[in-house]
Length: 345
Ligand code: HEM
Image (cartoon, rainbow, N blue to C red; front, side, top):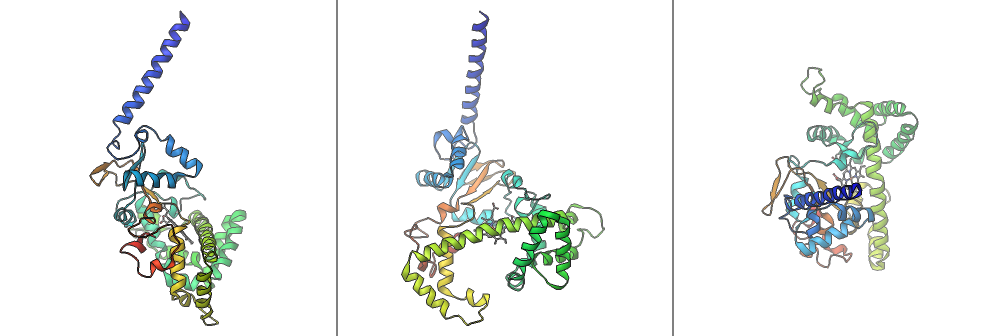
């Protein structure tokens, strides 16, 4: 009798759980958005694809089947439209970084990538803006930036404080990217000029820990991306002997002491790099964001503020209208790109 009661209670609990699960799925505000039926109930299929490394192609297949806006799971929507890509990238557009970004901690403090507070992020971007202009990068990037920051990175692992002190010292006579950022930070006002620890002021200041995190962040964000982009570019060129010959011919025309500007002016090299970045972008397959807090409406579908929205670049750069025969490596397509094509790739 006692056994029967336990079984009955267990079955009732299970039934309750299933009903709750089904109800949650049916009442999911994302329900009207096109997508496979199971994606309104669960995050498991998308997690499964993420673990297998197949999420990009899976979401791409959903777009091909259901259109430019699809429900990826019970809390995530993907949108593959140039206008949405623009909206997500617009400064002050109200899109917010996600808990995923916040979890990426590589140092004691948040760095640009992981800062989810829009105000603090904007202040940090402003702080770095001058050090990151094309002119500043040309002046300070190579070879000094590599030598000094690789040196700094080694010290970070051992004695972070010394690394920061080194950067401060380096700033005096041999400028590099980070010493310039430091100089900007030290010039920056404390927000309202009172010297108080107000929020704006804190965002402007760079503590030693913040510098350590930013240095590590730049190394992380800039190393694998660049090496992967170059690896794929070389691979793509080597697969096309005629392109390799033309590229070598273009490069052979450079003056002996060529500069960054000379390289930037080479049309074929520029087109090859653009095409390699389109097909083999080492960045994420898209950009993940939260919409503005009050939610947003896209193509008539309401998307609540706590939904993750994925701007699915992978699908956009394979859009037949913008990039005919999209899977083919074609360096000529950027000679006269379709309207909007360069913005997306
Ligand atoms: C081909 C090379 C690169 C690609 C495709 C790439 C791609 C991206 C993408 C897609 C994001 C946005 C990620 C997100 O918000 O979810 C991003 C952010 C970022 N990248 Fe890169 N990146 C490249 C190279 C670099 C390099 C060389 C550096 C620095 C030396 C760098 C530093 C950063 C930083 C600091 C952020 C965060 C920016 C912010 O949140 O304001 N990246 N990158």
